Image (cartoon, rainbow, N blue to C red):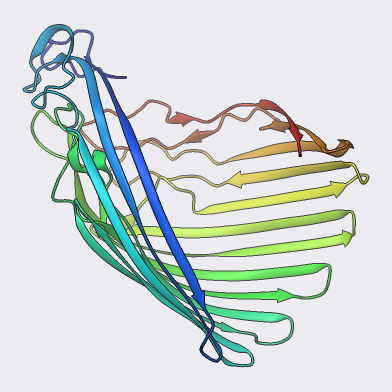
Length: 370
């Protein structure tokens, strides 16, 4: 259920009220095979399909299609001129082929291509390639390229009679091209580290764009983005019973329309974890996750979302009784007030104080293996 406080000149003192619902059936088929008949090649092929049917779309609301008041909440289920979405279905068929070619003792090329066809918006072709070099016995270097896509959802295509956002049947898929270079080094049995650098380009990003009129936003393929960044990971075991892992990640994304930062995501993140086998039965793990300040989009006048750090603690008992595993965890141990940025699109009012994330949680789990 949703309720927006837009009163449309005072006609809705309690706001526009709607209670949408639906049911959905899905069926999926996947078949793949591996062929090793060619020297130094391993060929992986596959076909498949997805059939999705959205039905029994329902809604109760207090406004008409022109957003005039009904005077009360009315059930408009089954009325295509008023319900929030028509009953729709989607078929998706795909085929892919991938070749792993060991063309030298320490060189391998993995390349592939996938074709997808959707019944409601069109098709997409996505290639990928990875050149892997065993630089030394302990160092591996990888050069990677890949294209991926996201199909528009049924909601983004067809949502209607909604005062906040309107669907768009002319939507196409958004695509991303990613380029990476990665180097990993197993220095010795105790110490491993890796470095990864990346660059990406996003085209036809699907976003809700502010429009004039009674409907605030419409989904469109409206943005192009680029981004770059990197990650450093480290794993160290000073003794057999203790394992330490850590990683640091940096990323920066740019909206190419106005050459401004995208915002709503941290530029810096830091993660650390310690696992300690106290005994053959008892395991103790603790992790720290720090997320840096999250800036707003260029048009959002609100202050950035503050950085935060959370600590989790887990105690696990394995086979404390035969085939039984017991665990006890405290998440967000110090009860930090964590917030995720809420979207901004004028004239839609911003959600005050952003999205609150869970505070301290105590979780117990009991597993039996048979």
